[in-house]
Image (cartoon, rainbow, N blue to C red; front, side, top):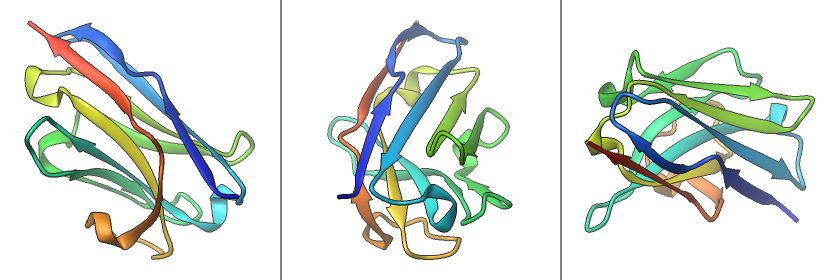
Length: 124
């Protein structure tokens, strides 16, 4: 069955970097668009980044442009989120998800499979 498992979260200081991984199983990654979302306590889940089917296009929320990079490794069936220049507002649980849309999906209800999430905490 389809499974998504995130890893790589942790406690870092402001200005540090982290790379999140999302290991996919039960399907071939290159045939699906993928996204990263995050949810902070008391807030709604929000779009962070997406990569198209085939990996040739990417999209980012304005608040991470220039700091975060989404990428995929078809050989490892894994999607990554490289996060640089982290700030306190980036503290959240980060989720990866799969969508049947080819590209451009930014709403959580456009994604059909989700991982369990990985906690990212940024301290001052």
